[in-house]
Image (cartoon, rainbow, N blue to C red; front, side, top):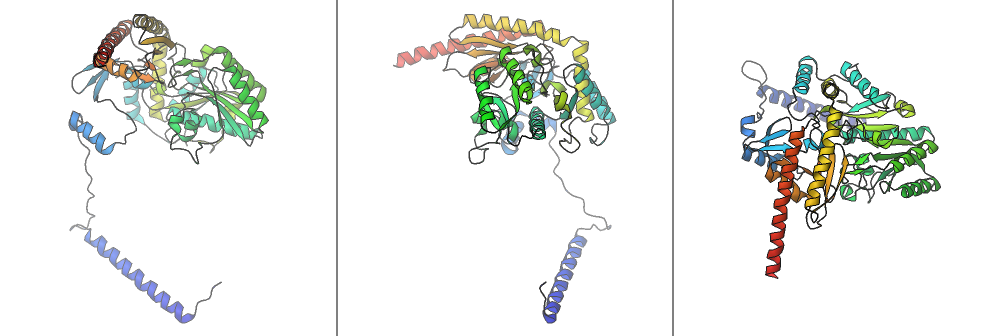
Length: 478
């Protein structure tokens, strides 16, 4: 212990006491000056939010985006005022047929009465409590999901990325329980599993990794293969085993959505199942986009005749209300214990009431039947348009109401067709490098889908005429 001379100690103590008294006196003076004449504290001043009347002014919204919103999206200059069913309406009075549905999220369309009523009722009761307590709507939604899938247990969160993070954590913990200290998860090139760091590391697209690594590397423990390639899969598994690592999981989308609407191959997925059975690894299916009925079956894995250990859901699960879920069976369902994983908002009463409303609507209105019928209509309609314009359009692929049409002209980005559709009053979204994606609400009618196809063909025709005129002009100049 350091000993201090008594005289020096007295000086230090005197200085501290003087400083402390000065600080207290200053604080009291400051506090006194903030008191009102009646002895109460001065009211804090906050800038109130702008009214919706102001916000819905086109210029105001655009200006505030430039001023205050981070530029994480390339946004089209549409200001959506309201929606009804499969239609969206902008502040300038235009009507759009929505074949984006919040990117495969608004399964019941916009302003669905049953969904709105369920949310309003829950808000009037209790919209959020901690997961420290039992939440009836969470229990009911988990039960419905398990009754209509191979899962036995559900973990709720808020998004697809969070659901996939939970799956990755579950796979690593499961591998650790098996004595694996270098767990590897295999995923596929052109996959998309979310924007959080581990989910992004599982996403085998370098363009999304740029600037987020450490010394050029993302989160370690991921190995990428070609989608639907059995030989590449087997080679990766062999390499992992020979390198002294352990196979923790194989994580795949049943259908690659952002990668260009590429359906899974039955043989490939059966091989995955066989490998996981042989090695003890977990088979993880990312169903965030394709799941909850969009493929014409409730879950994408049903198209592939396999049973996953874990699958994830989000997007359409809440019909547009944020909710995600990791669903598991067998040993995977019992990996997590209290404190191993958690989410503040996950499975709260509001989100789960929305999920239950979507589930009930699916059952009451035979939504899967509609998806199958409209999916066939969409596939046939797009194929017919592609046959008319073979220089611009090619293969049509996908399941149900998750369909893509390839743009074969390498000089035309799919975004050009999206813009052309927008001019006609049709909202579409690109997927991958050369695909235009159709993901309308699952409630879309035969007449509405026929109108969507008509608008798309009109957009294609006008774009072709424009491209031909442009080519002639370039020849003339040359």
